[in-house]
Length: 494
Image (cartoon, rainbow, N blue to C red; front, top):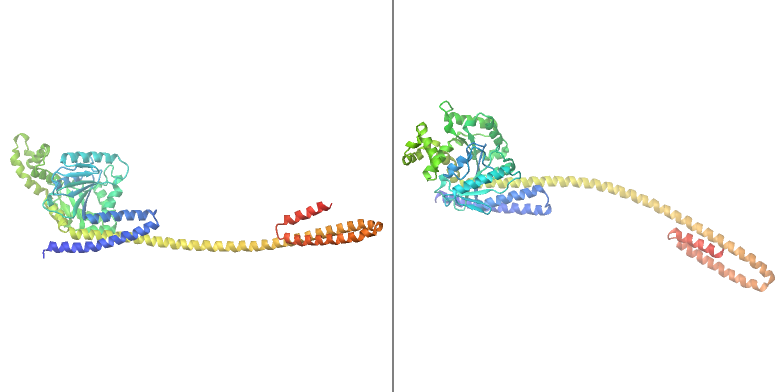
């Protein structure tokens, strides 16, 4: 069986298993997010996983190109494309992230930015230039990327099928207006499958070189170890080297030593370091493809003829035959063969390896979130238990206080009952004495009336006793009822 077919079958099998893992991870994160919808960590994790899912479905294989401003990054990318699609000038240009997709069916390029679609290299170049100007003036983080579809010269005869091969053109870390894209760029570094770092030969042994390497050192150690074999370093503008400059082997050795000094713990191989002239390569490709403007053609002739260039004495048809020679001199084909072709040939394994590590990263982040949440819940439970103990003690103190209050209320009831009884006994005795005194005088005058009065007094006494029984029940209610009744009886008699 053909090796590529075997690789494809293995790729499909592993991809199927990986798809199941991603779906399960998305499901459990969604369940947790439903419980805690406002937790920012979960929101970011879910958003990141959605990007991973989209990349997995579209089978995007991404290569990021990073460089300090004016290192020739856009020139290198244009050389890979064989056309001047990306704007190049003496001033910083890249202020938007551009996703360059290998598309053999779009020889003149196709730019997509929202509702905008352009199909002409000149229009695309001007549009990107205007976007960059607007991007540098914007202080907000820009989330939307520009899609640029065009054939990569090294892969122009290669069809990717379902897969997408993308190169990300990112702003340099020292580029004006790039600050608002910093978080976006760093986030992309977690999602790419390979990284190409571009050095400027004319700025080796300068502070700018240290800035570039410091950005590399900022990458998390575990991520750097993952990408160690997928990191490639390109020293551009090697054509600027004078006869007194370092030899090629010395330049490679110098860069490797720098990497070891700035980024320890990783073993760097000379095979990961390339020396090129992007400008020579671009001019040669433009001439080969028939995309050279009059200015580009003059610059090409100057490169070929050097000090012998005389615009009035140039055989333009013959000079174009030198394009392959200048391309080889640029050493770009060697870079393409070693990097782009290597990446393309190993895209199945590299893609799956990148996806597995990315999925593993999401699983670990979610696991860490659950550990922190469990620790927080445990701490909260201990705090609640302490609060419950305090509340229980306070409740017991309140109950003790209520018990004492009940005893006090009962004592007051008893005192009130005795007071009411005493008042009525005194009232009854006073009334009886008053009536007896009055009617004793009457009895002496009329003896017959005495018996009737005694009968009346007995009935009156019985009534008073009935009232006392009633009052003894009333005193079970608020005290003012009994007091009010006593006052009324006194007023009635007197």
